[in-house]
Each structure stands twice: as structure tokens, then as C-alpha cells.
Length: 344
View 1 (cartoon, rainbow, N blue to C red):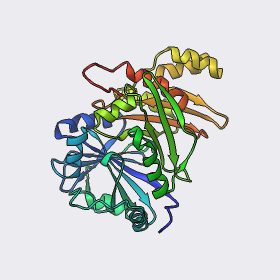
View 2: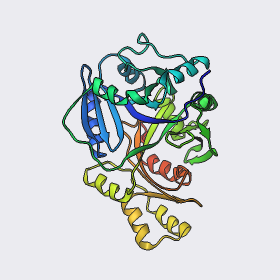
View 3: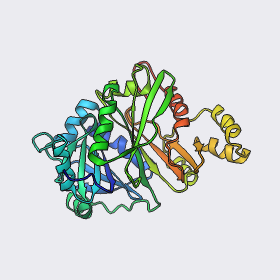
């Protein structure tokens, strides 16, 4: 069996939506600083870029994306990973009993190996030498220029059923060699959520897997509303988050509001100056610090109560802001309505 890949990184995240939701998701992407830089040469699929981040909107009325959104609603349906040797990873998957997805199961998908992932999503394996050709062959340029400011995918967060929590950890550890760090117990207003971080040895690929056996938690409502597990949010890393926050407000991004009581507690915990605390509060930005460095977080509201985005800034900090997770969940809980099981 080939060894797990020594290095890997996320190349794109694909979103499956209906034609009716396409324009709304495009508007959200634009408000978050993304430009539509490519159109698929034969499908209703578009490429969106900011920094080195690629997002793909799949509104094709047939094929895998269409089937996925019919089952799960507007969702993250695929993740593209760049690996040095895609065939070796596919062979390792076969040894582990993880088969490739053929065109009969996912018609019209990209012409690269695809494995079944969380909640029926796909994991595309893109060879390092194939990245440029993949984009050039599949997409025609629109002429729009992406925002050149640095932006990368920091991590992706997935929610799974509690009975699948360990199985999906094993999937990523055994196939890709991701390493575990300490599990976090997150306090949701309606119960406890288990959160397990996983990352590649070089930190280029980070995931968090979340699950809860409490029926009222946001994680459990996501699984129920989504008809199974899936990716709940994408975290994007920016080097100067305060400037980014200002730009997001100016572009009309719908950001998650944080209760003012949080900032009074924050100043007391970390001894922040009144000026720094006020700046964080004005931006609705969360903050954490450990012995290695500090961490800032900023969240968008959810799209169609399904998925949302996070912007982060790391200063040698290696965690995921676990002490702030309960604050974020409480802020999202305020938007919950009786006719919608989940707001995110």
C-alpha cells in the first residue's frame, strides 16, 4: 500500500445550488471579496477567486451537483485536494476499501480521481502538476481580476452524526495521514458538541469534525436539516483581519453580530486596552490567546441556513478559537426561528 501523501493542500471548495439560488450565492461571494474569474466551457459552473482561494458554484441542472443539492439543499458538495501523486493516493484508498467514484455515480464530474467523502460529498485528487491545466481546460476566463490581497483556506469544519464521529476521523487519518490534536468540548446553548481537529503534518490542510448527541444543538440540527453530515463552514486566513473586516463592511457582507457582553469579559480576561477592545467590538470580531500567540475570528451569516464563512488571523496560534465557539453558537442561536430548524 502506498504511504499517505507527505504534503497536500486544498485547491478548491465546490458548492452545489439550484439555478434559483445561484445569483444569491454569487452576491454573497462578491460581498466577501471574491471575483468570478472563470466560466465552465460546457456547464453552468463558475470559478470564484480571492487571493489563492478558489470557490466553485455548480448550478448545473444535471449530474452530481444537481443530485447533491436535491438531496441536501444548497451545500458544499466537493473538496479538491492537491497531492504530489494522485494515483498513489487513489491506490491507497483502494487498499483501504475506499473506492473511486465513477461517472455512473457522479456523471459529469471533473476528469480527475474522485473519492466519496463526508455526507456523500466528493474528494477530488488533483496532481500538483495538473492544477494549472485543470483550470485552463475546464474554465474560460471572464476577464475579472481576483483581489490580490493574501487569502488562503485555513480550515474546513464538518458536522457528522455522533455514531459516525470516530469513523470519519479514521477516514482522514488512515487515508491522508492527518494528525489529531486535543479534542474540544464545545458548549452549545442546547448541549455539548464534540470537536476533533485534524491536520496534515505541515498544517496546510486542517479540518475540524463536530458531532453531538444532544438533539437541540446546532450540530444536530444541521445533520437533521441537511439529511446527513456535511461541511458547515469554510475558514479563510487573512494577514490583517481588521482591515479585511472594514472592507467586508464596505462591500455589504452580512456578518454575524456578537453580543457586547463578550467584549467586557474579553478585556478582563486578557487585559486588553479600551481602544483594542472597542475595535474588536466594532468589528464583531472574536479573540483568543495562548502561550504561542493570538487569534482573531470573524463570521458571516449563513447562506440559506446551510453554510457560512469564517475569516481568521493567526499569530503563531495553533488552535481554532475553541473558547469562543460557545459565543459564536449563542450569537447564531439568536437568529433561530420555529419554522427553520437551523440558522447557523
